[in-house]
Length: 442
Length: 180
Image (tube, rainbow over all chains, first blue to last red; front, side, top):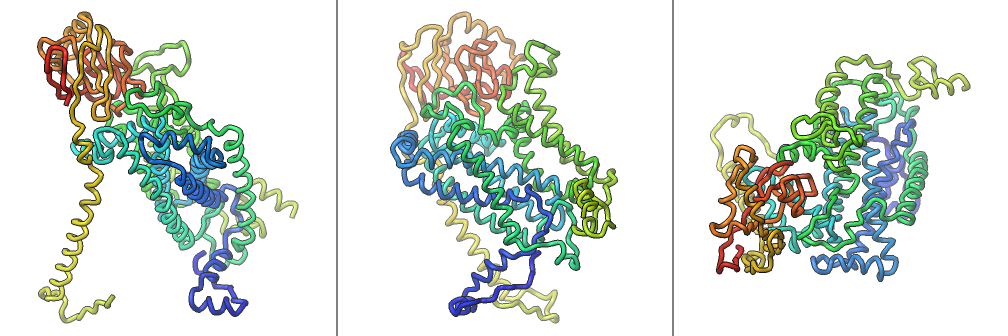
């Protein structure tokens, strides 16, 4: 939907003066009226929600820095100072900490939407790849931010994650020392994490600009997954404003309501009580787990008995996403028309949830209490360890085996020629029952 | 930027002086950038005051038999464990073939001071602090990912690849050690 004609007409003398010098109003006006597929559903509203999340995190973060002290002796107390003494400090901090969770909730829905509707396929590979870069930057930023309160979970989370890098053969140890700025996680580590936590959101904002640039160069995908034919463009698209500004706005209001439930009624539900204990390098909390949004990857890390292999599996699970556009062999984008693949997709979503559940449990705990099955290698079969292994196997098979294979073998349902055709003419195929009903009535 | 105009008659000919200037200027720019980048990267390595905090002394009379004292050395915990004869016996009996990272108990303590086991108290998996006395081998159990160490601090079970590290230390007197 990139090169649409500019419809902006400067109205006042000032606008005409500005338009020949810095056509910024024209740019914004053209952006707002970009022709957008008219069938986008609510799964498409999460892009806007994510933009809002980034703004909320940056604004609350800048304010928090006005009161926070990045020093190993003072950080914990300064966070308590924010919570108790600073005006509205408790609310600003709870918005920031729960905001991270809401950000990840939205990004996971956004990614699964892209996966289901094939938004990563040609010509949209760059949008997807930049999205994966954004996801990695988000995880890095969230991790760095989690360290800053310098509580027990902050400290030992930082120890565990930085030690992952130590597993790299030969150079791992020197890299870890370099990252720490010492021989353990300590004040130098906290200082640099703070510096980078402040930097990365602006890097994210920069990559978001590229993500949107790529989006508007290739054009938005839509639930039907077809490229809109040139002659259908006037029928199949509507201007972004007011149609999608209103739709996104409504979704944002619902999303903010959920956000507010966490901030005002259960602000610590997604955190860990241990992080309200000041960091103590000599004692590790009995049950150390990352934040919920990292649990599936944590489960994959623990599923592998070898340290370095575990790290490779964990990073590989995200690395795979970079080559996803080339692993999917199907020409059909939307899984609405892929009767076999959509089931593998639904299982994939379930597997991702279950991996998260395994990540929160102790690996040796029994899945079903009181039953001892037989030991396979290093653990009982009735344990989260073996469940994690099976789930990890599915996660990787989904991308490496199922996607290429099903794409070649599956017979997709007929795909409509345009977004309007099944609704208006009754020719083309009828994708869903809802549309079919509308047709009968209309 | 000037546009590069390729003269079709010159293609495949000797490099010109202009090519040389391009390469030399590019190389100088890359070299200069790398030289400027190095201090910006290396500043993250341990500073002089961090490196200066290298050694501590510890009085062993503070530990009673069967107990362990945890002290902080270079920001990390160090375990000083006064082992019982049974614990030493258990560690010595273990055949090396049972070990993931084979090492004799004798090589992990100083001769004549077999009862005192001094170890860096961070799990060799991901650096958590293992819990004293827990786990099926009576040594340590790491709460993070379930690594189990024996009474010599050797890895017996779980994802950790190596035994708990023995720091550099020396006995100043019979009851005083210097670690680091």
